[in-house]
Image (cartoon, rainbow, N blue to C red):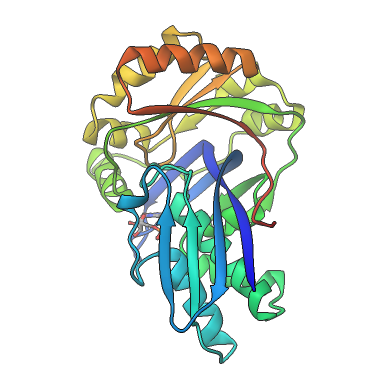
Length: 297
Ligand code: C5P
């Protein structure tokens, strides 16, 4: 028997970052929007725990126990006193190390899939607790939709969204390590006053109304200067998307994927074509959000 779970990517429409905490993490006001780019995680009973992966970036995915999907299976098995022997296969469509929570998606997907395969019957609360142990973005991958993440991003409050938002994503040649980007944020803000992170009321209202112009005027990412400092050519990609008519252009999470908010699906095709022709990125994808969280297929 096997179980397949589909899990969405995310874009951060606002990522407000506070000063580094004593534990090294940063307090956030992190407005997540799940978008319709998906990984599918399939789990099947096996003699031992193993991970395989297919997809354009599969070669970059670790297949050992550092993979969040493997860690999710191990954590659930340990809590329920059972063997973690399972084959986890990831059909990967979310960019790897791209700032779109691809690894987090696989962690949430494997957790939900193993829970179903094993009949563990874990409560939603327990699943979310395990997700938070796996990583700051993993709980959001489970719930999807739109949410405000506080703490290190793991404490979630669901948000209402009054429409569909269309996006173009430009994938960069290479990845950025999340800790390196936060480290660069610390370096760039050293000696300065880093305010408490706050969700923007205007941005939350724009989401609730489904108002794309208001959302475009309010999207922000405090990690963007750090990502651009480590990956300067992203400036060219952002410019190419703006010149092609995107309403807003920003780095997605810790990058290096760049995200372009557009008016509708036709505009997404136009901006995607221009970005492909610009030679400033490796690949281009379009997707709309909000999208549902981890779903058993
Ligand atoms: O929680 P996660 O494993 O995704 O975090 C990866 C790294 O990103 C952390 O080790 C930390 O360096 C950085 N991070 C942070 N503050 C957050 C989330 C992540 O500094 N709120």
